[in-house]
Image: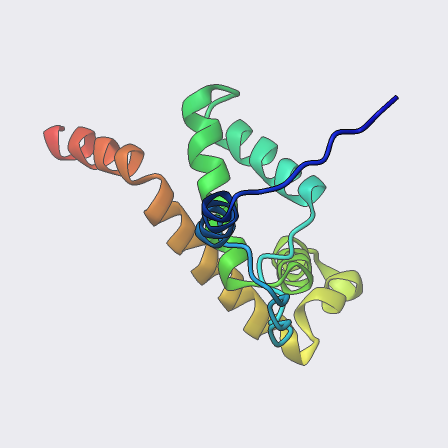
Length: 144
Protein backbone atom coordinates (compact mmCIF):
# COMPACT_ATOMS: atom_id res chain seq x y z
CA UNK A 1 0.00 0.00 0.00
CA UNK A 2 1.38 3.34 -1.03
CA UNK A 3 0.77 6.46 1.06
CA UNK A 4 0.55 9.61 -0.98
CA UNK A 5 2.44 12.69 0.03
CA UNK A 6 0.29 15.18 1.84
CA UNK A 7 1.31 18.80 1.90
CA UNK A 8 -0.50 21.84 3.18
CA UNK A 9 -0.64 24.93 1.11
CA UNK A 10 0.37 28.09 3.01
CA UNK A 11 -3.18 29.44 3.24
CA UNK A 12 -4.46 26.16 4.80
CA UNK A 13 -1.77 26.32 7.47
CA UNK A 14 -2.82 29.87 8.33
CA UNK A 15 -6.50 28.83 8.39
CA UNK A 16 -5.78 25.96 10.77
CA UNK A 17 -3.79 28.27 13.05
CA UNK A 18 -6.69 30.75 13.16
CA UNK A 19 -9.21 28.00 13.93
CA UNK A 20 -7.05 26.62 16.74
CA UNK A 21 -6.63 30.07 18.27
CA UNK A 22 -10.32 30.87 17.87
CA UNK A 23 -11.23 27.64 19.64
CA UNK A 24 -9.42 28.85 22.71
CA UNK A 25 -6.51 26.48 22.59
CA UNK A 26 -3.54 27.88 24.40
CA UNK A 27 0.05 26.98 23.61
CA UNK A 28 0.76 26.54 27.33
CA UNK A 29 -1.56 25.12 29.95
CA UNK A 30 -3.17 27.61 32.34
CA UNK A 31 -1.57 27.99 35.73
CA UNK A 32 -3.45 26.31 38.56
CA UNK A 33 -5.48 28.70 40.66
CA UNK A 34 -5.00 28.92 44.36
CA UNK A 35 -7.08 26.28 46.09
CA UNK A 36 -10.34 27.91 47.05
CA UNK A 37 -12.05 27.25 50.34
CA UNK A 38 -14.51 24.46 49.74
CA UNK A 39 -18.03 25.79 49.93
CA UNK A 40 -21.28 24.13 49.14
CA UNK A 41 -19.76 20.81 50.22
CA UNK A 42 -23.02 19.03 50.96
CA UNK A 43 -23.00 15.41 49.79
CA UNK A 44 -25.79 14.35 47.46
CA UNK A 45 -27.31 12.06 50.08
CA UNK A 46 -27.61 14.93 52.58
CA UNK A 47 -29.27 17.10 49.94
CA UNK A 48 -31.74 14.37 49.00
CA UNK A 49 -32.61 13.68 52.65
CA UNK A 50 -33.24 17.38 53.27
CA UNK A 51 -35.36 17.76 50.13
CA UNK A 52 -37.48 14.68 50.94
CA UNK A 53 -38.07 15.85 54.51
CA UNK A 54 -38.86 19.38 53.31
CA UNK A 55 -41.31 18.08 50.69
CA UNK A 56 -43.09 16.03 53.35
CA UNK A 57 -43.39 19.13 55.55
CA UNK A 58 -44.73 21.15 52.60
CA UNK A 59 -47.52 18.71 51.80
CA UNK A 60 -46.05 15.92 49.74
CA UNK A 61 -44.01 15.02 46.74
CA UNK A 62 -44.74 17.17 43.74
CA UNK A 63 -42.68 19.20 41.32
CA UNK A 64 -43.48 22.51 43.01
CA UNK A 65 -42.29 21.31 46.41
CA UNK A 66 -39.24 19.66 44.83
CA UNK A 67 -38.23 22.95 43.21
CA UNK A 68 -38.67 25.03 46.37
CA UNK A 69 -37.01 22.50 48.68
CA UNK A 70 -34.03 22.08 46.34
CA UNK A 71 -33.71 25.86 46.31
CA UNK A 72 -33.76 25.91 50.12
CA UNK A 73 -30.96 23.38 50.52
CA UNK A 74 -28.87 25.27 47.96
CA UNK A 75 -29.33 28.48 49.99
CA UNK A 76 -28.41 26.68 53.20
CA UNK A 77 -25.36 25.06 51.61
CA UNK A 78 -24.14 28.44 50.38
CA UNK A 79 -24.09 29.80 53.95
CA UNK A 80 -22.98 26.80 56.03
CA UNK A 81 -20.54 23.96 55.59
CA UNK A 82 -21.98 20.48 55.78
CA UNK A 83 -20.26 19.86 59.12
CA UNK A 84 -21.76 23.05 60.58
CA UNK A 85 -25.17 22.09 59.24
CA UNK A 86 -25.07 18.60 60.78
CA UNK A 87 -23.93 19.92 64.16
CA UNK A 88 -26.44 22.77 64.15
CA UNK A 89 -29.30 20.50 63.12
CA UNK A 90 -28.34 17.99 65.82
CA UNK A 91 -28.20 20.67 68.52
CA UNK A 92 -31.52 22.12 67.34
CA UNK A 93 -33.38 18.81 67.15
CA UNK A 94 -31.99 17.56 70.47
CA UNK A 95 -32.42 20.81 72.39
CA UNK A 96 -35.78 19.84 73.89
CA UNK A 97 -34.64 16.47 75.21
CA UNK A 98 -35.25 16.59 78.94
CA UNK A 99 -32.87 15.65 81.72
CA UNK A 100 -29.21 14.80 81.57
CA UNK A 101 -29.41 13.43 78.05
CA UNK A 102 -30.60 16.81 76.80
CA UNK A 103 -27.61 18.52 78.39
CA UNK A 104 -25.45 17.08 75.60
CA UNK A 105 -27.35 19.31 73.18
CA UNK A 106 -27.91 22.37 75.37
CA UNK A 107 -24.67 22.83 77.27
CA UNK A 108 -21.76 22.83 74.80
CA UNK A 109 -20.49 26.39 74.18
CA UNK A 110 -21.04 26.16 70.41
CA UNK A 111 -24.61 24.86 70.82
CA UNK A 112 -26.37 28.21 71.11
CA UNK A 113 -24.28 29.83 68.39
CA UNK A 114 -24.92 26.99 65.93
CA UNK A 115 -28.63 26.78 66.77
CA UNK A 116 -29.04 30.51 66.13
CA UNK A 117 -27.14 30.29 62.85
CA UNK A 118 -29.22 27.28 61.80
CA UNK A 119 -32.48 29.11 62.56
CA UNK A 120 -31.31 32.22 60.69
CA UNK A 121 -30.08 30.29 57.64
CA UNK A 122 -33.17 28.09 57.36
CA UNK A 123 -35.48 31.08 57.85
CA UNK A 124 -33.63 32.95 55.09
CA UNK A 125 -33.87 29.90 52.81
CA UNK A 126 -37.61 29.59 53.48
CA UNK A 127 -38.21 33.27 52.77
CA UNK A 128 -36.13 33.19 49.59
CA UNK A 129 -37.40 29.94 48.13
CA UNK A 130 -41.00 29.78 49.29
CA UNK A 131 -41.86 33.35 48.41
CA UNK A 132 -45.04 32.45 46.49
CA UNK A 133 -46.27 30.08 49.18
CA UNK A 134 -45.65 32.67 51.90
CA UNK A 135 -47.40 35.40 49.87
CA UNK A 136 -50.44 33.16 49.31
CA UNK A 137 -50.68 32.39 53.05
CA UNK A 138 -50.47 36.10 53.85
CA UNK A 139 -53.24 36.91 51.36
CA UNK A 140 -55.44 34.18 52.82
CA UNK A 141 -54.86 35.42 56.39
CA UNK A 142 -55.56 39.05 55.42
CA UNK A 143 -58.85 38.10 53.76
CA UNK A 144 -60.23 36.53 56.96
